[in-house]
Every structure is written in structure tokens, then in C-alpha cells.
Image 1: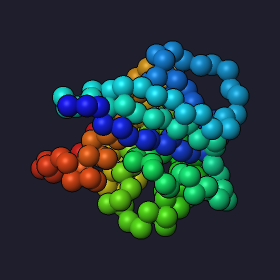
Image 2: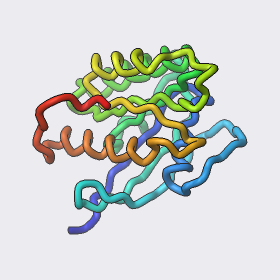
Image 3: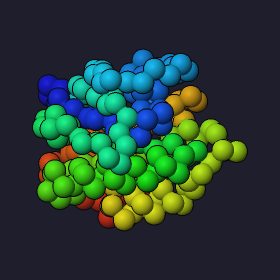
Image 4: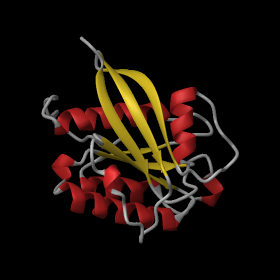
Length: 183
């Protein structure tokens, strides 16, 4: 079977680690320096459930609650990874605004595969958002939830596995499994 092409956008408040997660996934290294992203697109092949995928990963510029999301964020995007930083309450609030805007544009949550990601979980002493709060939000939205550390390459690849699974479900290509999908 030829690889399936999927486009995934990482969205969230500035400085939450969208670029770090993306580069850790695509190039297997952690970028420590912070240059605000304009917008970058990366490509990586990934095998999920025996199917090969060619992923276009769009690392978007940081959003805030007042951002007008460009039309390009809704056209030809298959799934969204919404990233907040566990050490920033503000970034958690912003990700909720971004989710609401996505639903406004996409029509409903069925058309909008999402994975919620709490990044920087290595910063245990600076935590402002609990794991339980992240899980609760994901359950409300009925989406997968993961905490990651781009720095320690923890659960980074799993984020992309989960978004592919969510996209396939939304496209009707994966049978619904019983039980809970939140990890």
C-alpha cells in the first residue's frame, strides 16, 4: 500500500514547545534556543498500525486568545495537536480558545481530530496545570491526551501516533474500540 498523506498542525500559545516537539519528532533532537516561529513545515514518514504515512507537520506561530486564525489552518489540515505548557496556566486557557475557534471553523468535533498535549512535564517544580486538569479537558472534548517532554523525548512520537489514529477514526477508517481512549 502506498503511504497515506496527512497534514497535521501544531497549535498553541507562544513558547509552549510546539517547535521543540516538532523537531524532536522529525529530527530526533532537542532545540534549546527559542526563536519565535513564523510557520514551518516539516515532513516525516511514520508507520501506524501497519500503514505507512507521509506526514506534513505544520509548526504554526504561537496563538493567543485574540488570534484570528488564518484560513490556511482549516483547509487541507487533517488533524490538530493542541499544545500547552504544564508550567503555564495562560497557555492552557489559550488552547481552549484555539479549540473553540477550530470547532467554529470545522463545524463539529467529528470533523476535527485533535490531540491535547501538555508539554514540558519535566519541569515538575514549575507546574501550574495538573495532569488531572489536562485529562479532564480532553475527556470533555473526547480527545486523546498526553503529557510530553520534548527535551527528554518523552511521548513525542506517541503524540503523532494518536493524531493519526484520531484522523483515521474521523475518516471512518478505524473501528471504534470499546473503553477509554484517554491515557
